[in-house]
Length: 93
Image 1 (tube, rainbow, N blue to C red):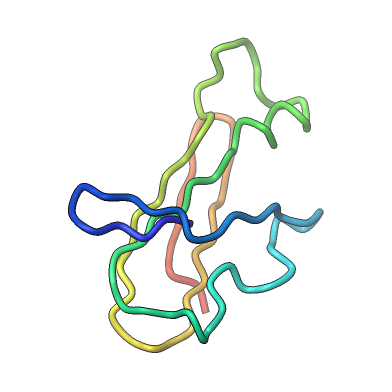
Image 2: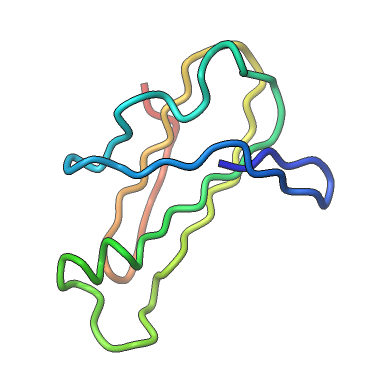
């Protein structure tokens, strides 16, 4: 997870998902929350290779960046729905 300010990206957290594809704890704990622009970078290629879905190298999706804004003190869930040739995301509940 990166905090984005202008052209600056500052890494603030890094986690590995569990077997369900989720983190075991919030990536950004509530006490460190700030409104602003953030970017999650999913290393999707690692998952696709590990599960035999990657195909030939170079694979179509390797790293998937999702940039989003957090404007209020609230719970943010940013899921990545992934296939070898596409993905989607949304603000979950």
